[in-house]
Image 1 (tube, helix red, strand yellow):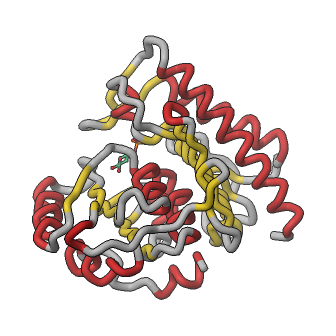
Image 2 (tube, helix red, strand yellow):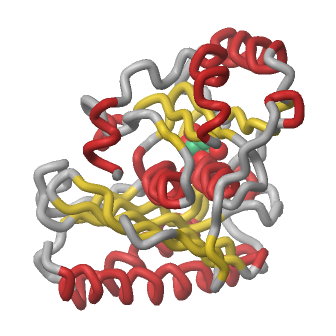
Length: 273
Ligand code: IPD
């Protein structure tokens, strides 16, 4: 994709992430209808409405582009071969959102020909807009982000959980990570969990399965902030999700060993650096 076309998409991405964040905040501040899609898997009226808003705005400017949205708003060639693909999570951290906790965000990534090029995450209740462009760094509002290397004994690693993997696999991973000397947390938004690694607030994020709309924007931020991440887009990662591990580079070896995620990562270097 030529620079001018990518510039236009970056500008549109930042504007739409900001607008979608404000729309999500408006929903959050009033009573909303909450349903379950599955076990501990929430959906609210805000998810569909915010996804429709994002797609409508982007389609108006880029009618040929393809879309892959968590709430089903997919159209065009929503695969890794697409010339222009937007991957959208209208509300990440939906369980928090549905239970009146402010730790949620809007996450949007843009890919071209299998390459992850742009990402934005809006956390409206915190007044935070995170963004990244491949090769051009990553920012929280106007401040450049860098990962923070830490001794494993002082490290905080977020371990994401969903019912898509057996509970015993999760608890075993928690035990192995604790045995390294790190502590762990689970804050309920994979996208923000990755953005926090990029900003050096935590030192790693791992989850045994996460979907691409939750992970792509944050993964680009970690990479652009000097961090390491596994080859998340390997195989059917875009369409069906994959395990994810992203961390400060000095913790790669110990966290790969403890989580079992990220053994083969040669493809990631090609796709994300
Ligand atoms: C979920 C959150 C959660 C992660 C799950 C995701 P949603 O996304 O990111 O932190 O652990 O894997 O499914 O449902 O809030 O968009």
